[in-house]
Length: 195
Image (cartoon, rainbow, N blue to C red):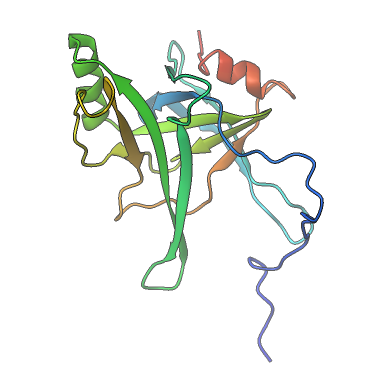
């Protein structure tokens, strides 16, 4: 007889017969953090066990570092995140994290942002209600191919950042846990800055 898997044992269900709150969209703000600015020695992941359902990460940035906010019109849906699940050749589950942000105009500052996005590796935080979700925590996200067409794009373009296909994440996007209990939204609002 096979031994039960401790990794894939479901320990809770979900009743969606009469939903009272459905979180359908992210606030139209994303905080991009240069992956190298995270102090990974402070990172603590809490993952599911056979008795506990948890899926979160706590971390701090290196001294003097901050994240950078991208904001879009709150009535739109330009900023969002999602993930794709697959299995590698060994049968292990892996996830491609993806985030979409909006970059506007053809100004010199816009071109500098695009150039840095294209050459960088980022961890991205998105907020939905009181929950802050972290994408690309272990391996980072980078821009994929895109066409920047301000005439057809209404003055800007949606820029997608994603896990590299050959370097996916091992975990779903993680829920952020602040060092100060209940301080998740405050940390997001402060761009996770470590003054």
